[in-house]
Length: 434
Ligand SMILES: [Zn+2]
Image (cartoon, rainbow, N blue to C red; front, side, top):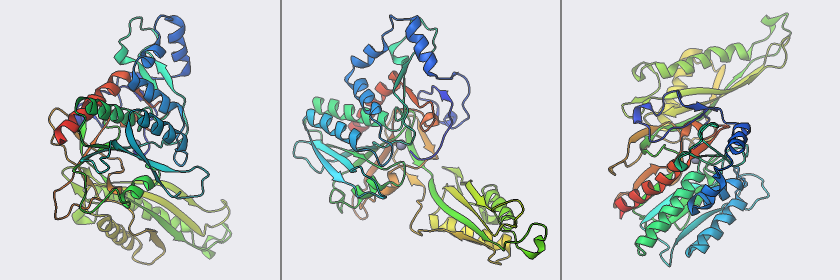
């Protein structure tokens, strides 16, 4: 999952669709090392470690959280997962991923399947990289003053505890349990690197001999934190830079210069307003499914000193697309800039790679027994090009444990109960796909 989210800690179970993206309220805990310690001190009989140790799922989840795997440093956790999958008698392949930038670590995706069946019908996938910084694994009771705890309510914290090591762990155990019950089930696993940064892992898989035309798989299940809801689709994304060039001068004689900051400000303000303007009047696109496209000015830079008229300014912008293609929105942005600058060229837009960006993704949500939601974050979904034109359409599901609201936060955490329920959720999706 890409994006940035609230640093507050909250517990959200299988929340109703409408509430999912509302601001957090109620049941908020400030998680600190202190409270975790207090819980242990006051109630030494509550052995949280033992609860984890007694469960292969929870122990595996713990072990992969304890191994840091910030994007570009996924090697150690990858090797741990490979060893585990091999010990479960799966056939495992390393798919080498050429580093996107200079890095010392070897990078690889993990591809696994039962027996000789290299091209299974159902592929389950998630990512093994996390956002920075590394946050150690913690266990905590729901409140420090609870004497009697329900093991389901035990809170597991740490980087990746939700995004996406909860999905990785639940997927592994859903597959193992399914294979135990039906040894002939046609299942494959793909755990990729680099999802949080560039999607390079999934792009590598997409361009490999494991992604044939026509496709060999019939269903793909993507694991990301969806709060145990099935995701019917997520918004697309388009990024670009706004650049203004002026002429430097002494600030006492500003008429001798041309301020790049004065030029860029009204353009940024206008671009930001496009999310509130109807598409008919030149605003950003909307759809019934995803609502309005939104626009965020994330970075702004410019100028050198308060006594110098600035000759340069730039801003980095991301649009979350509710409808249309990235090209459609590029056109809307270009026209808007021409309109507000009277096409003087004083401010330009740099889209960099014209192939970058992705349109909104529409996913399958036809399995009964799940809440269905849409989400605003990006995933690996658009990076996997499925060659199913003119043949049977491949179904794609997006599902997983944990709340997106804590996914990249300081207090990333999940309950034992939600993690365990996700195994059943994945099994249900597998059963529906068979
Ligand atoms: Zn993720």
